[in-house]
Length: 176
Image (tube, rainbow, N blue to C red):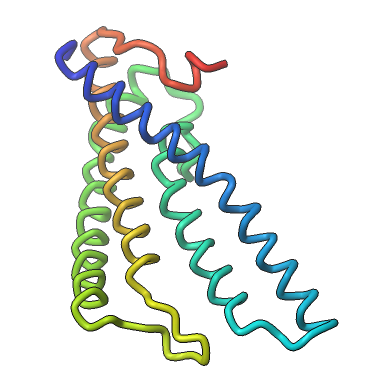
C-alpha cells in the first residue's frame, strides 16, 4: 500500500492544479457570454460567441471532473452514506468505484474514437463560424483520463484506509 503513495500524490497534485486552473474557465465563459450580449445589443452579433461558450463549458466540466472527485463534490446517494464510519465508507467505495471506472472507460473509448475521426477528417461544426472540433474533443478526453486516474487514486486511498494505512494528506489539505 505504501508503494502506491507516489502514484496517489502525483495524480492528486496534477488534478488539484488542473482543477484550480479549470475554475478560471468559468470566468472566460462568462466573459464570452457578456461579449455576446453586448455585441447582439449594440453591434452586429458575433458568430463565434455561442460555440466558444459551449466549448469552454465542456472543457470546464471535463477538466474539473477529477478535481470534483478529489474534493468529494461528486453526487452521492447520501441516504445512509453520511451516517457510516470512515471504514465502512471506504469498503463501499472500493466496491462501487469499479462502476465509475467502467463508465469512464466506455466514455473514453467513445471520446477517443470521436477525437481520431475529428483529426483525420478535419471535422468542423456545421455552423457559419465552422470551428474545428478536435480541440474540445481533446480536452474532453484529457479530462476523462484525469478522472480515471483520480478514481484509481481514490481506490488506493480507500484500500489503504481499509488496511489501516495512511497515504498522507491531499494537496488541498497541504495547501490550506
